Image 1: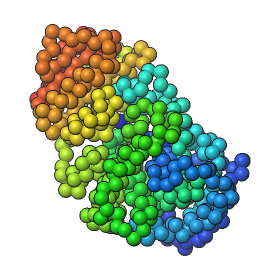
Image 2 (image 1 turned 30 degrees about the vertical axis):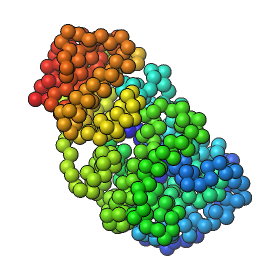
Image 3 (image 1 turned 120 degrees about the horizontal axis):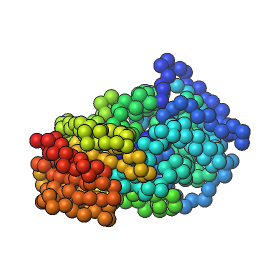
Image 4 (image 1 turned 135 degrees about the vertical axis):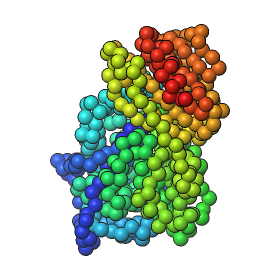
Length: 468
């Protein structure tokens, strides 16, 4: 799954071209926090401010905090940097830009309100239930409380949509502020040319949404790094993705909330930047910035196209998969369907990485081709039912995933006991949450958990019918 990305960004471009004008640099007073427009923030996974964290890799991570007086001259250069980012990316400036300095309390107040605005109670409940059902978080996990702490910890700058304003935090060192500004101004250019709200919300599937987030963040990271390396051509340099991934993991240890967060959040939060950057660098080598800008018009549909970017650049096709609603759950008393979606390669890598190992996540995850899941909530507190179907590159890959899923289910339900019907590629067992069915059929892996005891045999036959 992929939570919506909590990064405030512009969503609606100006239709008319306007003369670029310089606007005064001002700072909010205590009574003037940035207003929250009806933009769509996303859970980068779903990462507000994580760009700043990765930017810090290339700067003095432990540099002293800048004084506000030092930051004011920085904002005065925004128009010049805006023009430079336009030159680098080839995206024209279509509207003037406002910019402001904000304090830590103002950012925290803004982000708290943004989370509550974009996650009404019902949607927050579905997101939290999905995380709990897959075992990404504990049954006591409070998603709203966590998100506020997670995203405000790293906030160093953001671009606010309706106000067409870039906000830069007043506490990071000037070197970091300058790079944050280049990154956020690239988002402003993306918005003015491609309408980011429309772009990011075009897909309702978690995996497709995460892919589009990686387009936006990878593009902004590539532009920022191109600014840093100056005349060198980023497209001809060795891939920076492996270095960024390793350095990012080490760098993030200075953020207590991030470093102690569940693996799912840490993995998915970094994905749009590290894998997005690798994807964009590959695109630069194939066709320059014109090639990269065209990705917004023909974006990847899956996160697999970032992990294995040849799938996208070679126009390889991926299969589609369907998952009907299981009669055993639809007719069960006290079962309420909450969501139907896709984990994608990103989600399966997070699942395998959290429960098995990162090596297994890379090995097995790279074989992902398609998947669907349906989540149900039961009348008992923190009780869920889940059915999932996935397709892999070969029967051998599906068998590997089958065995990993067996291990995952055993960790989720320590009391899980196998029934006599279990075989090499079929597991049927009982847990405190109900019956569990897991099978491998050809190149597919299917499972259901939380199955009513009386419906267990029916569920086995239903799952087998899907793989025929």
